[in-house]
Length: 533
Image 1: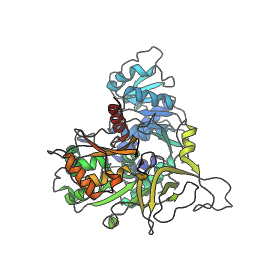
Image 2: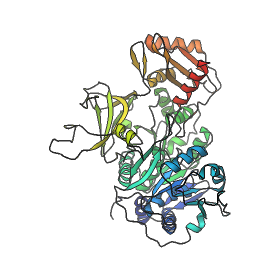
Image 3: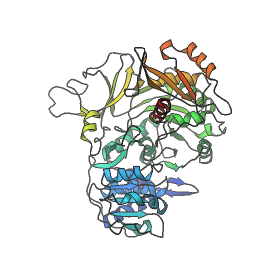
Image 4: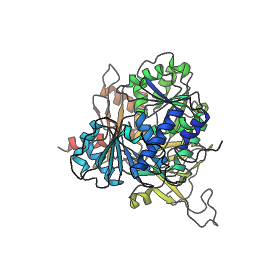
């Protein structure tokens, strides 16, 4: 049987192998691979019937549910490009994205469509809205997009999609936009399929696996739960949770074997009691979206001692970059590991030359997962996607055409054995008393004290120090933050220049961006605004 090269083939090939195998679970209902494939085919046919042209964008503004997954794979199957919108986004943010990438078709619900009415008038390229509800509202403006029910779209199968190849666009994933307008990262079929195969290989995903989709599907690591599972023929449980305890209930109820989440969620989960049965079936838990505090990792391993931890690092611009095998966690728990299969990670100086062991430099990702740039933004694309310098690994002088790599903007160091360690984001590094300090270094030590529930560190302008380190912290469950005791612990554990100049206490949890990460930018802006008055 041939291998998959296009995104939707991840489903079709698994359906061909075993159409009766469970593919998706949502609430009390499940779909088999053959059923998902039928839905995808019908949705793609319906898009062709609406006149969707090759490469046109299909936005999906829904919570996690069957239709969200079907539309995400059905749009590329038709030859279009899917644009997943985080369901937490406000109408103004949705409107910006619809305009920015000239969305032609929007898939949503009646309730969400009603909220979007004030912004749809400015979305001049939007021709069609597909809603899940039987009763179809009419757009407020007479010249607005037409509406069609989901059931009608799936009622007329048989139309073939446009021809596409693996270097064509498959998706545009928008970043959270915490530092300005969100950027649309364009990914090809090759990017997403190569990523699925690579991640599934080192996680050893298999048909017997059940993966929990707890992260937003608009987040690259969240969508990766679908692609890796479908490549392996595994089952995915779609979860829209309100409380961290809901995640534990789903792990136990569905006998989940693989969980991928971001550090803020793991911090909350580590402070809860886990049902004892989870470790009997949870084969691995994987971290992405930032370094997991060592204290959190230790607590999680105590709760699920039979479960393998995978520490990962990824870039939306390249889908996934590194992982640390479980057998290395005890030896180097602070490492983000080495390059994933079929990728190469370089650590380069500003002049493009390789860094020596232990020398901090910029993490640069090359290979099949490097995306296609930022949609409609040549300036930001040129900042992040750059040609590799001559004589970089794999770049001999006789090669004439340039190879673009992702220059991450993240500072890392590589040890003598090739293992990588995250230092910090270049735009988040704090310069205090002449020293460069990563906020994650400060946060790591704060978590080690066990005196905080969540915390975030950032730099604020200071006339003498350059920047002073400010911390916002929350209490542990049922406790309170003793600021003096916490500062005493900091003085005992940190060099003097790293000790926070101030610690503000806030009720938790700390605010997240739409991808579930603690929103450092918003917190620092709020703190500065409050202290300017």
